[in-house]
Image (cartoon, rainbow, N blue to C red):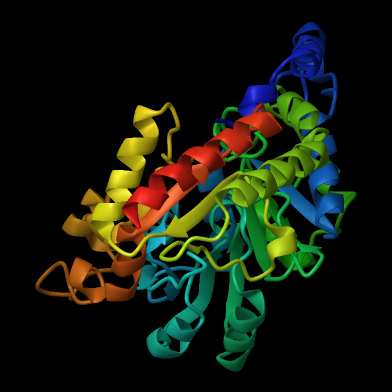
Length: 401
């Protein structure tokens, strides 16, 4: 298995060597105030152009990207943000860190936020919706955008696991007000740690820059967009030149890697074929799927566990690329604790866990993930590997279903 991390090699080493020899590891300047080689800036321009957006801000992680995006949007105490209960840690904690309340929503059979949940969960305090394009597949954006517009909400797209996925020919991350990406070790493109914030909104761009760079707005950014915002107290979420150098090498391989992964997925699914009782994840736009993690559902939880056991015994791992699971199962959600009790968005919700943060509040999600099986494919898999994975799954399912 593996994505960008499997392809680390000569190009990354060459770029890193140039940065080290030049001596400017910091993005904006090096020894004696000499300018850096500009790898971070190049990566920003490449990612923005790829997404047909005007602005991109490179940051230190995908978590930082979420906090920067939420800060740019002005999220704070008293606000609510709707997000899927089936999502990564940072989706929840980034909202809490800004003093706002995360409102957990069910997912549907696309494994992304069920659009109908927006109508159910919206309140006068709701500011926006954080949608996760889960594991290489675009969420149902038409339905999500229709509902956010109806309620006057913004849409923040978390594309941490889906860089390069598209929806009706447009890259994910180009539909909402602002979008975030992760370049962590196991992501589509890796810098070890790193992230990106992308937007078409000039005001959000300036606020994102200030949020990521202790409120500063340096000459490089002034050349992109004339400052109009008042400086505020930001944090330090800057990306360094070493991460930028690796990111530039990785990003150059994105399109060919996606083409390869899609060929692998097609070969695997052809081999599995159609079996009564097997249902594949619904993909709102099948042509835009990245192809590295395919999900299917079996009739029961026990059958899903047994398929995983049998496949592993034959050398085929059906463990997903991601460690995502339901937010209610996380310790921080069970406790409701925050770094400062006085800054908690959960104050007054007693007893805890309150309704909306308990396992029994998400029957639809629980029914889906309990029967779910992941079929991961890696960037270095061959077509023969993918066909073998499909054959093993089919042979074992024939005796299970």
